[in-house]
Length: 275
Image (cartoon, rainbow, N blue to C red; front, side):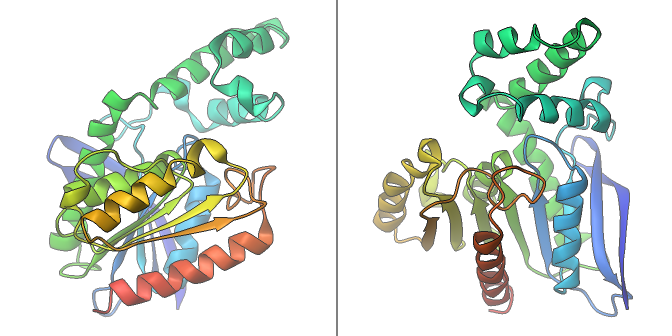
């Protein structure tokens, strides 16, 4: 058997969805689905590799491109432009990423021929973090889940779970508040939802970095809300880990914690997809 991975076009309620799909071939009977939800960098080589890891573990992994409109990615968010933007951001303090004036000052230190491209790509990327965009992202994810449960031969009738990273981590938890059929949500360093928590019907597992205070400090209140509504939530906080500790293309990658989180993730998925 071998891993087969390819981009496919799925039919959603509002048009085409571009998704990177990975599975062991041949799939002789339907398998559970893991929706792999991207970071702000999109469905890049790292997210594609993560999807393949879940395929190796026996799941069909679907990574929808949340930045594609009708299945087409805008030019300013092409793989090449996002890679340039990512390299630039990793060259400046993380606190400057979300400070427009500091970010602009750093852009002005770049070669003149790169400045406008960087500015356009970064403004578009950070614009995607606006709360108003989350409804579109959730719709894409719900459509992908419905496609897996009802239409895809490899996954039809089987449970659908999700694992997301940063932006995708927040969306993985938010998806659980809006999809009553969701089997389980895994959050890697994503912000918790603030509403509709009572609607969550599945277990939620979260992984966080102790040094990632902007995210980790939000978790106790979410834990309390989940307890109040008698929901299942486990939070794992790695004491010396920073944001994006699972991303092995990121300077903050932490191999030990990444191994532990992946092992716990597989145990969680095995439990929620075999009940």
